[in-house]
Image (cartoon, rainbow, N blue to C red; front, side, top):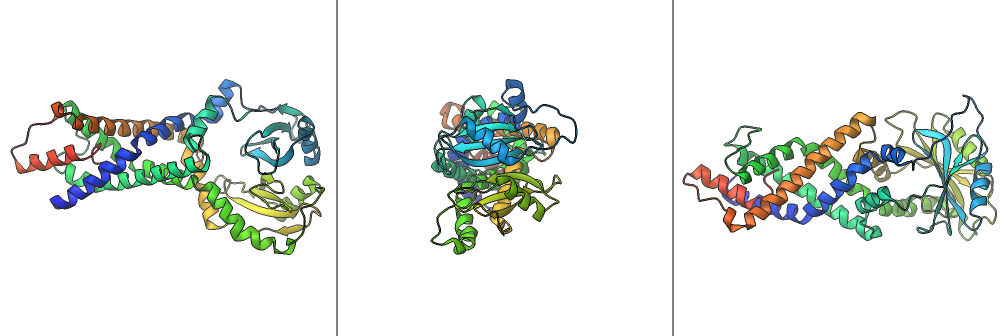
Length: 389
C-alpha cells in the first residue's frame, strides 16, 4: 500500500477502536463470568438441583405442574414453561401480570416427575444478574442492545482495518517478535501479536454478539412475517377465555416430531406465540441440532394442531449465534478456551488504550527516525490507535 492508503486505514482503525474500546472492555469483563454461569451458580447455590429418582420414574402431567406453580402466584398468568437444555428433570414456569410483562415476573422450578416445587429462583438480582444486564443491554432495554450492537459493528471494522495494516507494519519484523527497547514498542508488538492470535475468535464473538442484540427486532419481524399469515383464520375472534390442556398440546407437538425433544412452551399472548395458540418449541437430540428449534402451533382453545412452520433463516442464525457467543457448544474444554481468548482480548483492548494515551503524551514521543523504513514504522506506530491488529 502507498502512504495515502496507509493513513486512511490508520484513521479508520484508530477511530473505530477508540469509540468502541471502553464498551468492548466492559463486554469482555462481564462476559468472562457468564461463560461459567452454570458453574458459578452451583458454587453460589443459586442453581436448581433436581433430586435423583429411580430410572423410568413417570413424568407428571404438565397441567399439574402449571397448577402447582400458579397456586403460588394466583394473580399471575402463565408465560413460559421451559427445560434446561441438559436437564429435563424439572420445569421452569414463568408467570407474569400479563403475557408480555417484563417486570414483576415470577419463576417457579417444579419437578417434572413429582410436580413438587423445587425452588423459586430469582433471576433479577445478584452478581450474575448484574453481569448479564451490563453485558446484554447496559440496563437500558432495547436501546442499550442496539447501542452495543453498533459498538460490535465498530469492533468488526477495527478488526478488519487492523488486519489490513498488519502486513505493512510487520514487514520489518519477524512474526511474534516483541521489541524490548522501549515500553511503548513492547506493548505495540504485544498488541499486534495477540490481536492476530485472537483475530478469528474476536471476529466470531463480535459478529454473533451483534446478531444477538437484534433478537427482539427479529422476533417482532417473525411475528409480522409468519405468524400474521397463520392467524388469518382467527381474524375478529377473541382469545380463548379458558385454556385447553397444555399437556395435550405438548403431546400433540411431540407426536408430530418424535425424534425431537421439548425445549419450551410459549403460552398465548407472549412474544413467542399468538393470542390464540400454545407454541411448542422442539429441539434436536444431537449436539449439532440441539440449538435449532421447530415451532408447533396448537390452538389454545381446542388443542387442534394448527401449523408447524419452519423457522426463517434469520431466526436460525440467531439461535446458532447465541451459544457460539458464549462457547456453549463444546462443554468445559470450549468454555476454558473461550475464557483464555477473552482474557487475551482484554489485553489487546487495554494495550490499545494504553498506546493511545501514550501517544497523546508529548513526553513519550519517539525521536524522528533517519531512514525511510524507520519513518514509515514511526508513522504507523504513532498514528494507529492501539496498533495494527
